[in-house]
Image (cartoon, rainbow, N blue to C red):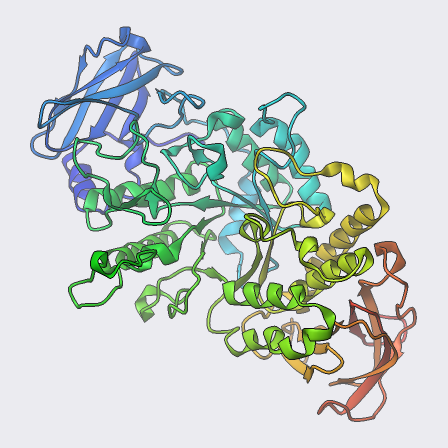
Length: 633
């Protein structure tokens, strides 16, 4: 499969300048042709533009032609070839000379260099089976358990400041994610960025995979390797703002072109979503990563900062208001709707995910219904409440019980992902296990319990790398995870638990086939705050008429009191078999498990017609599956 190049036509120029060109990367940028390279750039209201690079000794002898009054410049440079470095020399309306990287550069030189690199995008893909299956997959009724990963610090070589390449990661990361049982991986931004400590969220090269880890073909090879193992790839995408470095988009023609205002919190520049060419640039960028790199989804960073004109602004004198007097950024809202509509119509099976932290309504409703059109939204309320509860010491948990139950009041208002992301293990927040109260045994037990709660609660799942080995220190982007911890029994057993729990999740449709209705979830007893116990059941969608669907009973003990005979109401008679217990000794628990199937008695409990009696572990949880005969089938 090769990249499709398109000649610059009046129709394409019109679409670009009206914000409707969705594949601008096929025309703009540096495209290799017979005997040289065609360069095309948008830079309105300037005196001249030249291309300078390896092919002309950096003397800026390649003068670009201005096409009418379109703001678009183009030229063909004979002898230029793949691998050549280049920049644009722009003479502004005021006579200043700026040297700028190509906004559409497909590769950039490794930091601290700032040159763009002529790159051949063509790649021979071998993931047709995955791509065809993706077109018909229903992402809402399928399992989604995401491993969030920062490629530069998952593992690091011994050499100082070195990174593993995309191709090396394909040999290490792919089999690991497969073995651990995740369905998807999400990369923190892989677009080119100058500062490692930004984690990729301050982008300078929106079309260039970062050269820290190798080439464009290397990244495609890595994504293809995941697809061959049946694992989806989601990319973090940052359309809300860009890095202020001189060689980038800032003051691109000597004045504000791509930008609107300085972001008050991050020191970056917010995009001007009211400018049609900026919309074409960003919409095309989204399509680029989905088309050229076969990404299966985009998680949009900082959506909240895009929706509100005064996000991060505390000085009332600097506040801005829209034409209706409100604080909504109307142009950004329309951009997000257009972005989601475009992907929903042009890329079958791909998903979009919003990081949005307010009560903005209908984030995951279609634009035709007044929504923003995302497929999923991070459930930040669930995350904050859950981590606050799990950080509360045991004597005080009774008073915080509503932190565990409140999110069900809005659980079906959106299509949610339950995130325990990188943002929760940095900047003094502590690691997940470091937040748990009690001695070391209870900290491990609490971390397993947190995982059980997340995996059994309605919503898709996301966990940041390192959670599976119970790393005590916060994540640090400048070094690899502490894999040596697996040499210690507690950490090795914790990893085994996460692996088994991941496979339990994918193997049992009750945990994912109906995440968005009360048919798939029902409280058994949400109010046992005194004993700090939470019980509910999950039900799968039936596969045929008369099939009630798989039934799982979930019992979680958030306290330190053990129960040998704990009664739980159940909706059906029959036998219930424990399929996982976080207190199992193989997971470093105390061994308070239920080894035999439990028969439901016709004894009403918790508003249910039947009940079972089980052992309930300390700071632990168990899942029971309803079996249809004594043999466990």
